[in-house]
Every structure is written in C-alpha cells, then in structure tokens.
Image 1 (spheres, helix red, strand yellow):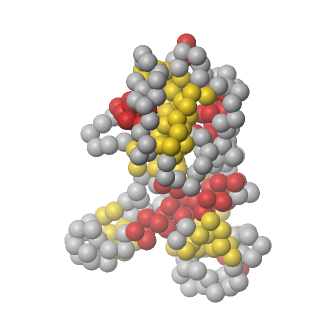
Image 2 (tube, rainbow, N blue to C red):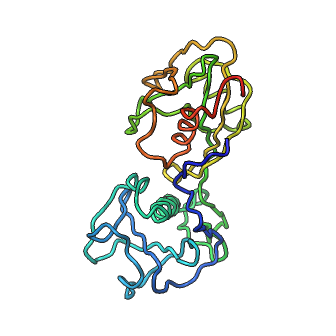
Image 3 (cartoon, one colour):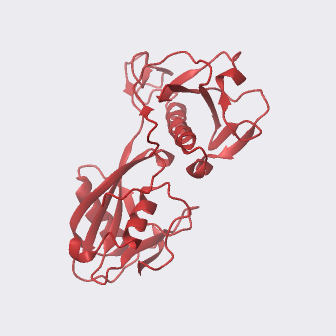
Amino acid sequence: MGILFYMIQDIYPLKLHNEYLPRSPRQGDYLFAFAGSQVIVKPDETFFRYEDLAAYSSFVYLFEINSTGFFLIEEPEAAHVSLNIRQMRSYKPKHLGFAAVTAWQLYTWMNDNQYCGRCSYPMVRHKKERAMRCERCGNIVYPKISPAVIVGVVNEKNQILVTKFAHSTYKHYALISGFAEIGETIEETVIREVKEETGVDVEHLHYYKCQPWAFSSTMLFGFFCRVKGDDRITLDENELKEAIWAERTDDIESPDNSSLTSEMIRLFRKGMVSFDEL
C-alpha cells in the first residue's frame, strides 16, 4: 500500500517548516490575505509577494516552505480579486495551494480566538510559540486540530463502500468519515462511524496513512477494513443521502487528487486492496 497519488500536502522536494521562528518579511516572501472563505489574490490570480506591498505596515509570520516565508496581512488596498478557499485544492503551483489553505487554517483559528473563552479578555499572539494568550488570566489557546477518520470498507465481493453526504456542497462519492469522540481510540472511531452511518460492522482494521486537512482543521486517519458478517446497508439519512457497494470499474473517483479519500479510492480501483488481504 505504499503507492502515492500526491495529496495536497505532498510537496516534496519542497518542505514545510512549521517551527515557530518568526522573522520579518523579505523579498520573495508571500503575503496572504483572507475575507471569510475567500483568498485575496492579485488580478492575475497569483499571490501577493513582499515586493508588491513592501510599504505595508503589519505582517504576521506564519511559516516557511524551504526558505520562503509566508505572512498574513489585512486585505490590501492594491487591486485584487478573490478566490474561494476550495479552489486551492487544484491551484498551481501545488505548494502554493497547500500554503494558502494552511495559512487560511491559521487565519481562521486566530479570528475565532480574538477573545478569551475563560474570561472574555482580548487575546494576543504569543511571542514564543504559535498560540494565542490572554494577558489577564494566562489562558493559552493553540491551533485547533481535530482527529477524524476516513474508512475504506471492503466486502467479500471486493466491493468498496462509498457514500454521498446529505448536507454538503461536495457532491461526489466519498468514503465513510467522522470525528473522534471524547474517550475513544481512533480505532473505536472507525468502528462506530461505519456502524452509525451504514449499519455495517467491520473488523481487521488496517491503518493506511494520515493527512492534515486544513479546510476543517482536521487530522485525517485513513483505515481500510473488511465487513464483519452481513453487508446490508442501513442508511443514516441525517448524515448521508446515499451509500452503495461499488466495483473497481465504477466511476467513483474524486475530481482531483488532493484528498486522502481520493487516494484511498484510487488505491482500491487499482486492485491494491482486497477483502482476503485485510
């Protein structure tokens, strides 16, 4: 199962440096601005760089890719247009799309934590680590990262269980997914989510790989597993509008290869996953 399809964070030979070692911007660094779920870019849909807005007064350091810095700024007065953050899934060059969604994750976290949840006092950026700090009560808030699972369930006919969400703008087939609940292991999350959404029991869990998914501030853990007993589907209509057993030859792929879901479906379609091997 070592085959790669290059998800959004797979930017090798470039490398993300997320160590919090803030510095001032310099020529060639990128500047990101956001308005809700919109990414602010130049009229030609490229990102602003330091030399475009060198007279700007406020730059918030985010991270580096190789030696290039990425900074957060307020919406610039210079001519610009907006792109939806979801468009970054297929933005080229790819490493800039990944940088944009990671920056947006940090922007959203900072925007959501302007005030202390403990005492309501205004929060400030921590000087020594990537965190927000309350100067009144000392409360420290780190970037939100929620654990969740993506599950490829295979039955004895070597079909895979694919679903469509009941309430989502994403209309393509996906795998069973869900967030971990308090007090459970990630393996227990797999078993619970499959059972809750489809009524199917599973066994022989095999961890595949994980993916940081900035769009929902999530760390996704991918598992393949096989059906235990009856494979009849009982649909949870609150979560899903469709769940079917799909063949390897069925048209179930995502429109891009940015996600763990799309990589796992492609792995199945290439014959790399089978019931007897799980």
